[in-house]
Length: 242
Image (cartoon, rainbow, N blue to C red):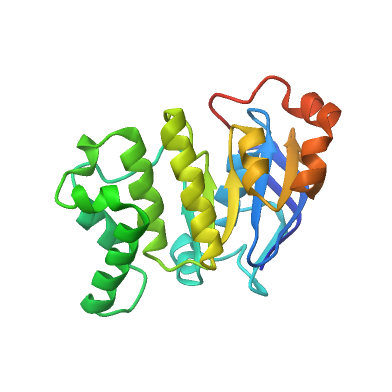
């Protein structure tokens, strides 16, 4: 579904990603791990068109998307939930969700139906439907950011640190919902600060170090490679990412 070949990305003149190769097969949850500054968030930004690569290619569903605008990429079925949630604080929950469907040419009835699906996935949002997003808790805002992305009806959902800053009980709930989204047919590419948690819900994993893939394999095998994980992740299982 998603294939990255020899991707090179730089900010100004400073290289951040060096010949990254990565593949996400349809129907899977793939996790991207690495210490702070490894290039994880930069990878997602390059995929979603927010940053243009210096070289290499990004293919989605067999089509090169490296030269496409972010809105074109969303219309193709790729949604990106960035770190920090980034809901529209002055808009209600319902208004935020409707914005998530802006790239789709669908009727109001279809948008309403998709909103009901979002409420089924996150019942708390139904209770907060008319509430301003900026007045909700961090966990509720994270639910909203994921639900808003799902309103675009994505084939691939990319999530950047969905558990950051949340209470453990909320984190468990968010991870359960990610599993549920995947089991319903949406492929997931996940960045998560808690490597153990990410590996427990994913099928395949890549580990980035200083902009390069240094380890990859099925999640069970990567979990067992304690020495490699410690070498490239160290004690950084919490905190802000790149």
